[in-house]
Picture (cartoon, rainbow, N blue to C red):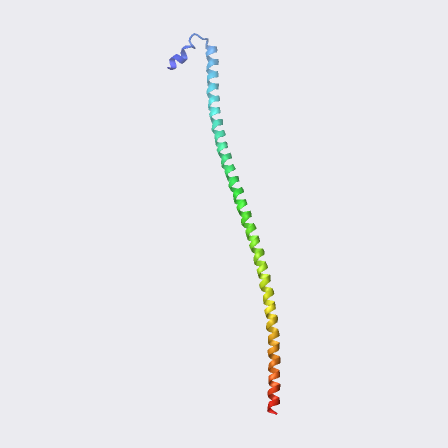
Length: 120
């Protein structure tokens, strides 16, 4: 088959044959360069797709973290309110205990005084 491809070159001058050879070499070189660039382009497109997927995953993760953060903030607010309520309730109960303790001490003194009066 290569003889048929080369047949058209018969009878051409050496200078023309040299130029044809240079042009064919240049075509081969350009084809190889085109293949390399095509491979580079495909590699870059694959890398771009990978980066786009990575960015999308990061966006999804950021959105998830934002929702989680919001939930945690709401939970913290809820716990803070519960803590304040419990603290307030505790203060009320301590106040009641102090009042009742004072009443108990007062009653004990009254009992001691009454016992002293009974003994006399």
